[in-house]
Image (cartoon, rainbow, N blue to C red; front, side):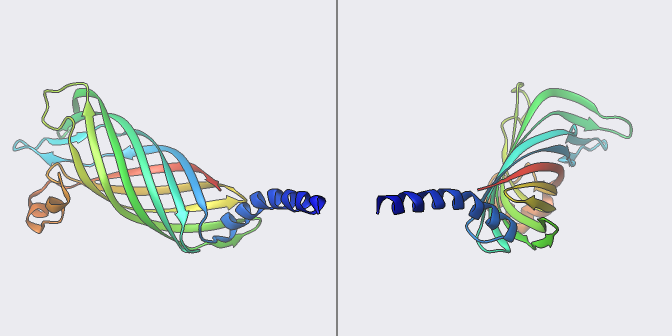
Length: 214
């Protein structure tokens, strides 16, 4: 009897990682994934001054991680954290002029992801779309500018694709973080009058990640 239980335990221990790999490939529900990523973010214009100067951030690198859980083969919940280092900048007709360096941009958001797994050789190719809401926070070493330390609502939407082989995969994605300095809370973000008056910025992140399934 003891040999039976020992054998059963060994079989279960060997089957667990295989089951996890199979779940990632076939898109079964209740599969967790962790996706660290790197990429490039192109910042939009936050507002425009009376003399035509556009206030923005320098484009630059972005780093982050996504945590996902499959609810069904086609639907997942995704949490995202991202970070970028940049500068405040005024852009005129020519090159922009940076006036404050070492600005940290922090991104926090939760998303629904709709995906469409397709068998592709030994793996799975899964185009997907993400949409959600969260926050974008600007921090800087200087405290003499009003936007330093500002945290605003940020809506986001993205398109991408995963290619998985077993529990490992690659994620390629482009995502638009939509925000405004006037969106300091959800009430303001959902007020049509505020949306009309606000300088809405579209900040595009192009990322490549390593997807780990569990």
